[in-house]
Length: 232
Ligand code: CA
Image (cartoon, rainbow, N blue to C red; front, side):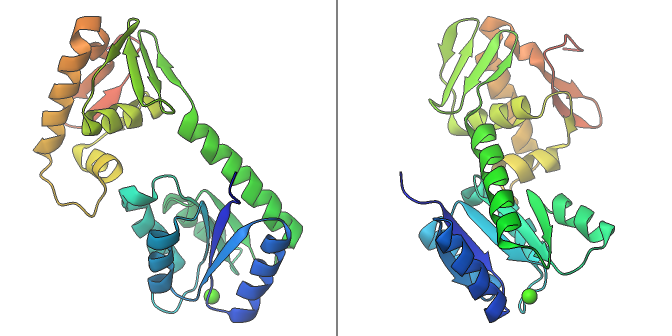
């Protein structure tokens, strides 16, 4: 198995080099970026597994960078840990809301950093491969398979991503705009009614099994996945 690649995005050279040194010693491959522009180049070229993103960067805040990365479908499996010198609770909340998986306040020990990296990677690999089940319906990310009432279904890539997202976040209502952001990526400019088109297609594929009733329309709000019966 290739070594896990960690991208360190930090403009303060001594800190960045210190982190790289300790991560290399812990067996990780490291990539270094001093600003978000370089970070995005390395993300595209090297496909790291995890990014450590400093809060204060010269060209863009770490928060903005994290938001940007989260909106981009290409970085779907990237784990992100924010680094900051601030201990403020609000910053922590906005760090996590931006899409970071965890948060580490400076100064931290190398041992703490490695422990957090391991925990985040364990969580993200689990969520990526977990088989999602809801009564009649089963989605296996590893094999890219959807089975309804024991029969394998043929889904288009968008319907598959949409179903995956909804099944991974059951019992929650998502607006069309939120679904566009999370399933299509916010860098793509598509009309909101595109969501309706794909929901209709998805329901049609699920219909013979009866699982179409899990994709529920919540009037004036959006869509929800629920296997608990409901309004359909
Ligand atoms: Ca900094």
